[in-house]
Length: 165
Length: 282
Image (cartoon, helix red, strand yellow):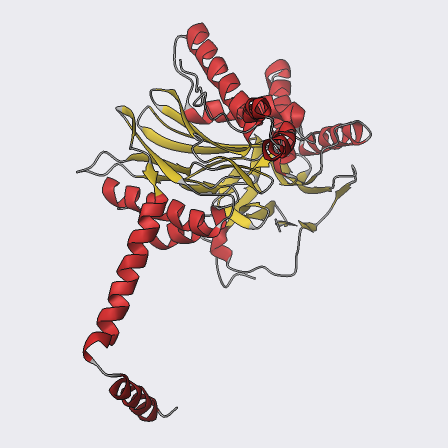
């Protein structure tokens, strides 16, 4: 089961996702990245049904980038989250709903760090910490991708600190 | 540009129904009724990449079996599941036979159109993305295609798995189809980054052999393609029953040598077995 976790701190948001891409009972890939970079300071994490995740996340990603091209400045994390939720909700009652669960993490220069939880029914809530998937087991940290978003932008963490609290 | 035309005498399932009707006997009528509906054809397919090795050429190995089945019947024992699209791209397909043949042709056409319009060849993951986008409108319908594009573009070997569900993965070791769990076990045990081409070919062949041994929907022969910077090369199609008989004979000889039955009387053999059990404390 795919797993996402996000934790908001004083001036950062820390997000992690597992790296497994599975197809029914077979793990096809062990280094699959579930994070989509919307802008320099916004990350979208997306899990759910096979094709829907990439299609929906890339659609949002391209639209956020288009906004920047048209207007010259980037969308704030709150605006991006609401845009994403609106799209999810619009498609929900169509013939092709997207079955995806999302975490949007961003750093706004005026508002600070923000973590938004969205699920496939179009719910949106700003949370201090959030997770999707079977949250009971966080095993084997090396098989996670962990990224930090703070005022300096999105940073990769090379090796998770095993004894960090 | 190519197109695959399966051997006209033995098409992939649905055509032979019409031919059998001419004979008119009851058996073939039953067969032709069975083959009229398109059904899922599950296949065992195996692909691996080997890194560019200093002494060898590296490249991608694509291997597949050749059985096309139709609800428990082997519709065609010599289907072709690995199809070249252009000199540096090969696609292996699994899922529903009709869908795979159609979508391979559509993909080949679109890749060629891209090349004509833009003056350069589409990359392998680009071709995978194109196929995924073309299949997306059919998500939720009964279209079942699980294709793996194996190729070489601009210094890199790429294996891209595209499924009609929408899953699209670039990977190093991909196995698809009903026989894939069995193939994965062999591949995971034997695959290393530092393999030579011959080792990789032997591994792929072994993986397909084991998958065809256990999986009911995979069998008959194995096709092997090797794609490098210089293009694809195809090995001769091998019948896996020869491998099976060879293994059986080898097993029997080893057993015989071990027990050395010829030179021992039954009595001494029994004593030997009982003594050894005593020694082991059983």
